[in-house]
Structures are given as structure tokens and as C-alpha cells.
Length: 328
Image 1 (cartoon, rainbow, N blue to C red):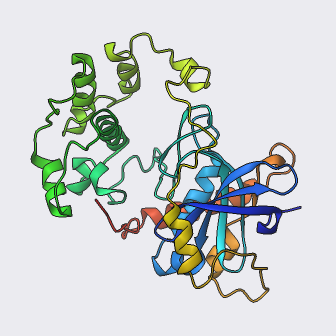
Image 2 (cartoon, rainbow, N blue to C red):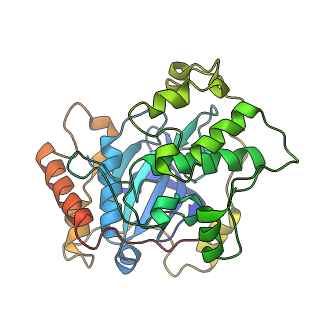
């Protein structure tokens, strides 16, 4: 039996995005808790983000890694698209699970590099984390991810980003031209500075992580001496911080907004045969149930390949990706 919204108890709203929200839910039978990401079909179409959502849906099913927020269910109704993930502490791109292990989430602008298309040239993502080559509209590869890791590492250590400004234009200029400077009020080791400087090298070829041996060079850096990478990946390492599950880590404003200002708060909408949403969403956002893996896949291989080919064709055309509205 396919999963539907009515199979879950709706709990508090814990996050909000451009065209959707994240809500805590609990399965009515097995009492498992999930983070439910629900996306308005009309908003999705209005923001020209249909292909982004379909790409995220396919990539999430293909991924299976202990440090990724993996997909558990996917379904839709008349109004919304739904994706359920294992519950985590905060609805942002890096999440902590109940044991303190970090997970990556949010793949709606993710892409796949292939031997045929080893580069990208579109501009998508959050401006503050964009590498210089993206801003310069140059071809880029996974080197841009090492840059984003450098920004995130700096922010975690110092509580601020290394490149800033009071407007998008000034942030962009800072990323492109300002030298990397470390705050004096917080002291870190020389090895730590070396890693951040390496990750934030403005030229991709100079960046720590670049090339086929880049990952190994990063892992063998003295700053990571003593770190057991296999223990880390298998989630056997002891996290330095374990969140309190009884403390809600969300902004109550999101729930108040839905209660007070939403014209149509989330509720069960049976799908009609004469759907008002686009045919592309209705036919390509296929249902998924993680409990059926290995028995009968919710997404048949031929459909997976067909959708992947069509998504790739759309992404590789002359127009590139839909460009997001960047915010500081």
C-alpha cells in the first residue's frame, strides 16, 4: 500500500523554504518520526523549479550513505509534493541526528557530473558559499564543493563568514578580491589555518581537494591526524556534542505563520483524476517507500533511466539551470 499523508500524525512546523516547509510527523502504525518536506505544486511551477524538484527526488533515491539524510517516503496529493526523511535536529543543509552525527541534506540544486559532461557553468546556490569560478561564470567541477566546505569550516570555528558585505554585490566583490583573514579573537592551530587557506584558494587548481588525489591529500593533512575516517563514516566515532532530543530545535514563528496567515494550512487533499497541476509533476514525481527496497522498487529501472535522461537533457540545454534568487 502506497504511503499517503493520512498515514502520519502532523506535528510542529520546524522549517521553511522558498516554496515549501518542513514539519515533524509520526507514522500512525510504527510510531517512527520523520521530517516531512512538503512543496507546493503551484509555488514550484511559479518559481520555475519543477526540474530542480524532480532532480532532487531522483538523486535522493539513488543515494544511500550513512552521512546523508536519506529519503524514506515520497508521494503527492492534489496540492503538494511530499518527501519524508529521517528526523534530524535542525532543518538546514547540515543536520545533527539524535546521536550527534552530522548529515548532509537539501539536494534540490544538486547535479551529476558525467564523463560526457564533466563541467557545469550555471549559477545556482547560496551566494555566500559560491566559489569564485561560479561568480566569474567559468566552467567548474567539484572544486566548488571544497570551497563551500572551507566557508562552512570557517563559519563553524569563528561564528562568521570570511567574505561578507551589506549587499549581494559587495559579497561577490569580497569573494573575488578580498584576501582571507582570520579573526584575532579566536586562536586556532597553524594546521587548521592551512586547511582553511587550502580550501579557500581562489584558483581551483590551487585548492585543497583538487584533482584525483585531492581527497586523499585532505584526509592526510596533519590537522586530521588521529582522526579515524572509517569510524567517522560508519558513525562509530564518538561525537563531541549530543543534542537533547527533548529540547525543540526549531523556530516557533514558522508554526505561528501557518496557523495565523496561511490561507490553506497543510491537510489531507485526495488526488483527483482531473489534476490541476502540470502533467510533468504528476507523472514524474513517483512514489517511493524505503521498506520496499529489495522487494519491488517503487521506481522501476526503466523509469529511472528515462527520467534521468530527460532531466539531463533539460539541464544541459543552452539555458542551463533555473537560477535561484540568492540571499545573503
